[in-house]
Structure formats: C-alpha cells, structure tokens
Length: 353
Ligand code: NAI
Ligand code: MG
Image (cartoon, rainbow, N blue to C red):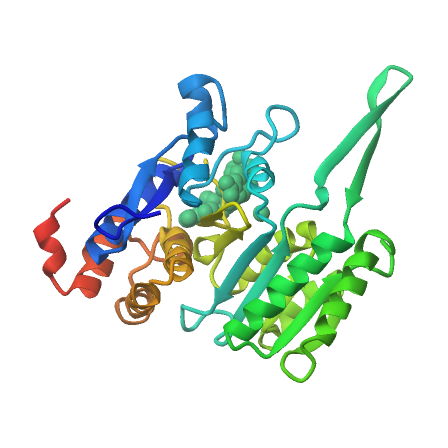
C-alpha cells in the first residue's frame, strides 16, 4: 500500500537486546539511500511485555495486517517456560510458510572463498508445531517428555514449489532436498516424496539431489561450494542455516525472509544477543542484508543492489569490521563513518546524525 508519494507502508519492529541499536541505524541508512518505506514503528517481544504485558500486541498485528510488510529485529524468547515464541506466532498468524536464508562469502581470506547458498526452510510445520507434553512418574513431573511433529503433503508441496520457482527466478542450477527419511520415515519421508514429485516438473531446468541431514551438515563444512540451493523441513532448516552462517563469518552475516500469502517479514537469522546488547558493537550487516531482501521483494532491485555492492566494498576495501568479524569497529563506526561515506560519497554528511 502506498501514499501519494509512492511510499510503501511497512511495519518496523526494533525488537529486543541488540535489535533497537541495529534496526534504528539501518533505518537511517535506508532513509538516506532513498528506500521507499514509510515506517510504522511497533513493539514486540520483551519490549511489548514491558509496554502492555503482551509480547505480540494487537497494534503490532494490526499494523502488519495493514502493511503486509515488516522489518523486524530479534525478539527474546525465554527458554523452557514463559511465553511461546513470538516469531513462531507471527509465522502462524500470517501463514509465513517460506523462510528464505541466503548466505554468501563476503569476507576474503576466511575459511571459504566461494560460498553462495540459498536455503529454503519450511516455516510452519515439522517439530515446530510444538505439540509437546510430559508424563509424570513417581512424583517427577518431567519423567517422560513427548513431542510430535506434523508434515503435510500440501505444505510440503507448497514449500517445494516455492523453492523451485525461486531457483528459476534467481537463475540457480541445483536443488538439494534435505531430510532424515531413513529414520523419520513418515514425518520427513512425506516431505522427501513430495519434493521429488515437484522436482519432476523442473527436470532439465534445475538439477535435483537429496541428502540425509547429518551427511549434509558434514558436507556443508567440507565442501560448501557443492551446494547451490537447499530445501528442507523446519528444524533442519533452522540448524543448517546457522551452520551456513558460520561458513561465511557468523550470524552477523545472515539475513532471512519469512514469506506467506498474508505478509512478508524480513529479519536477521540471529537473536537478540543479550551478551553484547547495549555495548554498541553488534554487527548490523544481517539486518542490513535483510533490508536488501525487503527491497528486492518490493521490486526496488536497483537500490538493493546498491546496498549489497556497498557492503562488499566496505568489507573488501576498508576492512572495517565489528568485533564478531575480528575487527574493532562499533555499529555506528561501521555504518555511519565507513559504510555511509562509501555509499553516498559524502552526501550523507548533510543528514547528520
Ligand atoms: P543469538 O543469535 O542472540 O546469539 C548467539 C551468539 O551470536 C552470541 O554470542 C551473540 O553475541 C552473537 N551474535 C548474534 N548476533 C550478532 C550480531 N549481530 N553481531 C555480533 N554478534 C552477534 O542467539 P541466542 O543467544 O541463542 O538467543 C538470544 C535470544 O534471541 C533468545 O531469547 C532467543 O530466543 C532469541 N532469538 C530470536 C530470534 C528472532 O527473533 N528471529 C532468532 C534467534 C534467537
Ligand atoms: Mg534459529
């Protein structure tokens, strides 16, 4: 939806921990870059709880319903007890069935020079339905823990079709279907079976192979250049995408997009990093790269490319990096001193911070 100035309404959730310090800085960069977004700032996670007792306030949901588009910082989820993951709830609420997680080598001299993989993770089913319960024995309430996963033919088909369409659109060559159908024969077998059915429609266009998840994890570490695109179930996708982030310099380099019929929500793969929150040293690249995916999504591809090129140039030429990448730059140094100078060739100074 746009206003009279061709602006695109988008929801902005700064999030928890390092979220606000990164997201606010990235939004300033986007504004100066001339990105088309008209931000509607909303709360979520701990920030939502502190404000009105709700980690996913109605105002935030209403905003995303209206805009269909959001940039989101990480949201803290307590482990074990406490409220249900807001991220999972958002995915369910808007039917965000596809999670797109691209990684590529951006820093030379790292472990690998030529990683360029896009992982498509099924986002709504599998073990993440969290259909869990305990059985009490002899006074121990947690004597036995159960968890059931659900994968359906229809969602498996939807995510596979999404992955192959993505592959064609982005001129990719090969799809690896990742599963554990040798052990979880029903749960991940239905996914494999369905993905292979969809693969038939792309024969001659996209090459298809399948891998068992553990073997895939090892091969990704030994020979990441053999992978082009991966399509997999929810939990495996979560784990492998963090592994892939590690191949290119860590979680600070990995963006993600959650896509569905009701909305598209863009975020970093990383969480709220409570260990470094407030120190001003968080790596803003993952959120910046997520915003480039968001620009692609609204078909402002030129602006997205400009952003990505500038990121490559800063990392390659200036060697300015945040501590997670072995440098000593703060978030603001990185973005406002080095990155913005390169991106705007001095014009950014007019918009002083
Ligand atoms: P995390 O991703 O927040 O942190 C893992 C490690 O990576 C930490 O050492 C952290 O300092 C580092 N790290 C992460 N992002 C970084 C960045 N941009 N720059 C520099 N270093 C960075 O994972 P963790 O600690 O497991 O989770 C913390 C909280 O975040 C939890 O409450 C979790 O539920 C939540 N979370 C939220 C996500 C989301 O909103 N999409 C995704 C993952 C976790
Ligand atoms: Mg994760």
